[in-house]
Amino acid sequence: MLEKILVYDAPDAMGLDVRVVARHLGDLLPQAEVETRTDFFTWHLGQFDPEQVEVLTDEVAARLEEREVHNLVAPARRDELEPVTPESRDLGVVYVADQLQDVMRVLLKHEERGPSFLHLAYITQCLGHWEAGEVYLRLQIIQHGEPTIISTTGFVEAPALPREYAFRRAHLLSFGMEEAAEELDERFAGAALVHGDARIDRVAAGYALQAVFRQMFGEVACDTPTCPLHPAATHDELARAHLDEDSRLCDRHARMLITARGGAADAD
Image 1: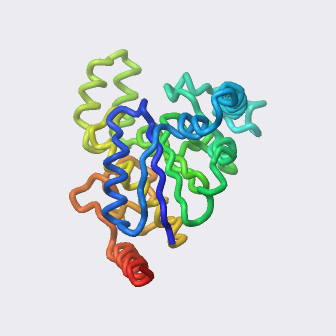
Image 2: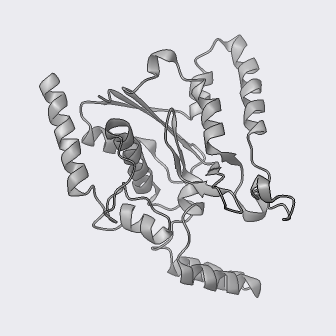
Image 3: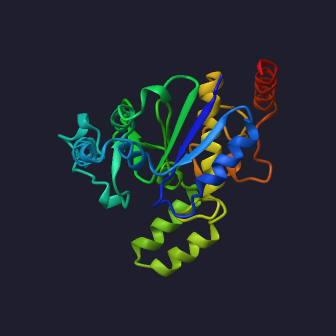
């Protein structure tokens, strides 16, 4: 049974309030203790003695730098294609998700590891993985495991944009019509999440639920488009799963949670 959920802040994520996420999880899982913390690295490095912190900070920074992706072209295709940098796509820092997770995992305290603990670390950096047969790094929003990592930048950058929006925006920018492109952004604001979007907490809570269900039940996806557990490949799908007025846990997943709460109450 899941006993404790640790939610780590991403202070640079505009609009994100992890207290909102924590309250949502606490309402759904009253048997679990939900705690909010500062960002993952600040919190865990802060648990060491002051004289150790500087050395560890430098060591962690070096490991993170080694794991940054500087060319988004798949390694197998780099001999035939020009490099594509994250900067050229305005992505900021990009990590291969499992490699970043390896760095973070070693900082977890032994007494806070195992299936009864769920660490949810929000970050602003991009996550991705090398998909077999694909030319470029595939961006992703969430990396499940210990700890679970959720990229808030991924909310915007990982899902595919609505086809009409992407085509028209590229067309306007190709003619240097930046102001018209900004107007188009406003028109499509409901269909595509943008940086600093006021709705970020709802999406952040939805992906936290995905982590909860994976940890508690081994559930990794849902076929119901309006369930927050539905895997969103496009902005349209993300909006429907997390932002639509009908967005909520589907009947099957809601019953699973109710049953788990009943079992926890019986155990008490």
